Image (cartoon, rainbow, N blue to C red):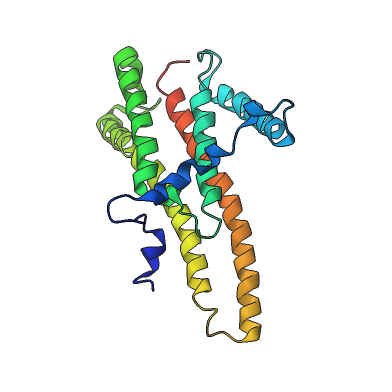
Length: 226
């Protein structure tokens, strides 16, 4: 019996070891295209998606970005998308609905961007704190506002992904708890609503992984002068 609504997001499966976190890596066990003599359709479609993402991320990073700079962001998108979709299956733990995972992804990225930018492009990073055409009187306030918005970026990235995944799963849990005492008409309505919500959650899973990767790419593009 559930003690509260959020117990469905409890990562603990054992007293000493939380084996539910293995769900974030379960798809990697079946993604083995290198063992195929002839590439299958899934591998070819994934390759086309990766090429399209590469072109888009390359455009965001700028023409002077180094070779292979889009690979971390494509890998990040695929990893988050995999975890979001795995959470839609019954009895599979949604790792991306926890700050432990989302903050682990966003904080190291942000720290690496900041360290690289401030160590190599210090003047550009200082200039980035003051937008163009800012009046002299507002410059101190703009520096403070830009600094705060820059510092909270990893938190906003983590909370955005976590909150969107929790909201849909929580709504489906609320509707699922009403099926036991529902009449036939209400039960049919609940099942239809659950199907619609599942479709919406599939779209949210794709959109949130894309948003996370695109925002990370934009943050990376801001640290180098173009």
